Image (cartoon, rainbow, N blue to C red; front, side, top):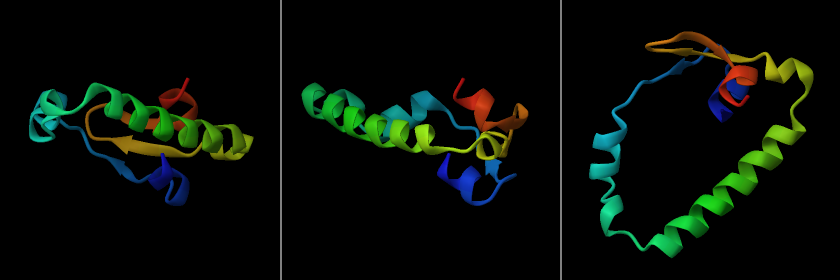
Amino acid sequence: MRQILGAPGTPIQAFDQDAWAAAGHYEKRDARKSLEQFRTAREGNLALLKSLTPEQWKHHGMHAERASKPLSILFA
């Protein structure tokens, strides 16, 4: 999201979410700490999204598998 806002049209890299989770050792993490980290990140992201102008919602990224995606679709 921040890359798209800073450089509209930036590539959005596809990734294997299972490989990402395995590499991050999510199964070994403390669930309470993970939930708190998620909550904190979510609050920051929501604050940013609420501050966007109508023009910024039109900024898009180029998804490697799904073509151009504006923020209004990515966060609908």
